Picture 1: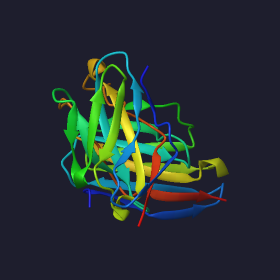
Picture 2: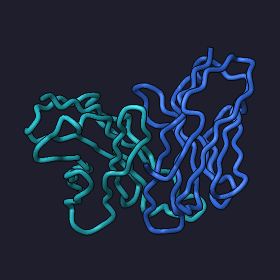
Picture 3: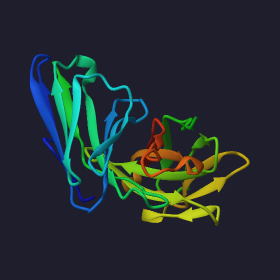
Length: 114
Length: 119
């Protein structure tokens, strides 16, 4: 285990639903990330939080809303998603401020939007 | 701008044979380079990284990677492949010279290369 957990592992939702993805890291890291992984496409960085402040938002549609209440927890709130949003959503954490901070990933949430 | 290319969608190797997974990169400054592996139904796991110094970097599970500055490559290698090495491999790069505490988090990942090791 990498020390990063994600729940749920699988989620099926309709386009009008509201749901949330949860990520928790037990590594004492100070930065957390959301990525989207689609088949045969590079990993897409969505959001970065450092010390609970959002420092990166890569032009993600507003139907995705992140929340970082503390340095150990990260949420991704979802509403009115589209079928093309179906993907594996990965959370990661790292110890930012060091010279090179490799990232530790959770197992992901497999999201299917009907 | 940073970019990473993994030119092969898939690599097939027989068990016991050496394997190479290719990666080339582009950064404006000096690179930090990473390899990650993803097994089915799992997140990415860190394998190894190049920061500076020796061009041959050794990592987990017997993997190593060679940094070649003139060819801007960072190929992943293993002398003898195992069936259990079958997985999806990602190369990643970050521009060392653009590091800052609040902005230096943008690690760019390649599209991944699927490795099949046949018994």
